[in-house]
Image (cartoon, rainbow, N blue to C red; front, top):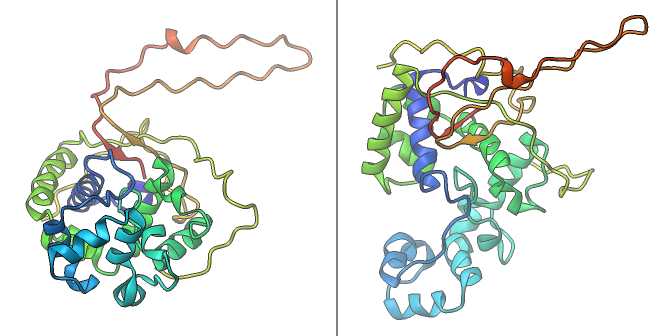
Amino acid sequence: MAESGITDPNEQAAFMAQMDHESAGFTRLEENLSYSPKQFIKMFGARAGISTEDETKAILSKGPEATGEAMYGGAWGARNLGNTEPGDGHKFRGRGYTQLSGRSNYEAAGKALGIDLVSNPDMAADPEVAAKVATWYWKSRPGLSEAAKNGDVTGVTKKINGGTNGLADRQAKTEKYLAEAISGSLTVEPAGSPSLSSAPADAVAVTQLRAAPSPAASTEAVAPAAANLVALPSLALVTNRAPIAPAAPAMASTPSIPAVPTPAVASIAEPAQPTRRSFFAR
């Protein structure tokens, strides 16, 4: 998070809470399109132009493609999400920790990250790509960072969700992560770059889409800040696991002096580290 400029404890807490809620505790990276008729009418009835359970059942019975199109297609989807082609509602359904939705948002994220997410929308559900999309989306939304720093959970939720669904859970999670951010137990860990081999080599997406003092950053856990978001190292989500000691670099040999073997990493005593909770190393 720090490498993306998310350093304020209130903002860190809000970011983690919203991503936690949107992805069902960092476990669901693709939107679940299974709804009861009553749920569907309450959440999507107005935009889909339906008001009866019989109408809803008829749509749901046709499968996820028809359901996704009713949720995110039509005039509403074209106006709000850039879903202008038949099938866009399902194709560009929610994926990743932000549940990124809509053709225009996939285009914008792809352009910012150098990934063709329009041709390869499933890549948005890759954990490491999803982490990059999450921090990009957060920083690119006007007023989102400011609302988070001000502790405005309702305002943050509206910018992420478009409404206030799950507000109580988001509030509770924000309070939990704020306590961790202030205590310094909310830590980050860099990871390797994601594999983007499934994207075409020449793929280029077109465009759209009470602060407490910051705890001291761990020099072992946080990578140096990058100049901008695109240049950031890939970072991963870590869930309740102890940190892994970094491998020691091999010592180079010279023509006149035999190479000196590098001591095994296992023999190097590491200071005790707290077990890490789920987080984005971004």
